[in-house]
Length: 77
Image 1 (cartoon, one colour):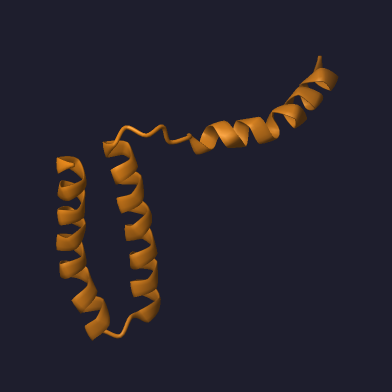
Image 2 (cartoon, one colour; image 1 turned 120 degrees about the horizontal axis):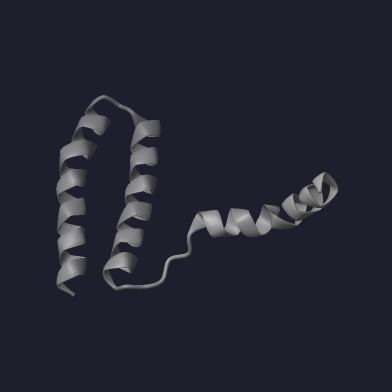
């Protein structure tokens, strides 16, 4: 529980520092990107803090390209 509160506190501080500047400069696209990335980062950080197993994206890419790699290396032997 302390981990979640710490992550949320850090996120709130970052939001309080960045959002007013983005709003003042009327940077709507940058504000959207910041919000989405902050949401993803906070979600992943909380999941890691709760020790939830997060899959590695490289494993998915390897699984996707492994059959093609095997096919190509079969012909190179």
